[in-house]
Image (tube, rainbow, N blue to C red; front, top):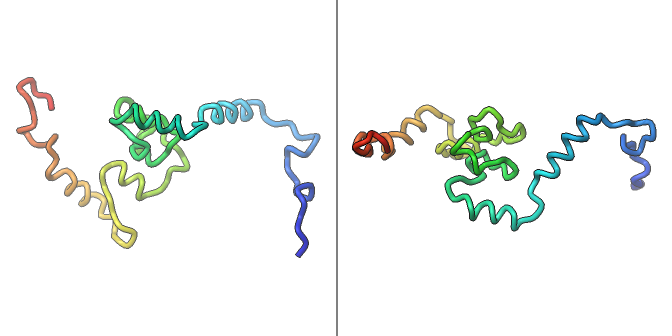
Amino acid sequence: MPKKRPEDFEYLSNDPNFVPDPEIEQFMEEEIARAPKDPDQLAGRLRNNNAASPADAGGDLDATWEDVNDSGEESVSGDNPTPDQSDVEENAHAVGVNFEDNEELEFIDKIDRRDRDRFELDPRSKTEDDSI
């Protein structure tokens, strides 16, 4: 089978009559500008924010996972989760539930077991001013 050259493929960007949607172009430029550009930047984010991690946002490195404990927008159950972050295992891990590939979900049972011995839910964990 003969190999195709790049010129043999039809791309919209190669079409002189194609005009991109300016809103989509602007959105793409903003997303590209926001994405981490080097590993040192991610390492710095991880070092400076030890109360959260990308796992709290379902494994999404590009999310503002530093804010999941404050706003929760990009957390697994937030109102702005990343659409392509649909890995069930990572999302379950983000809410404190782990399971094996061959295991039934039994999600409610796992949450009950997870919360059974949580210190925060023990009445003895509260202080005099009723805080944890």
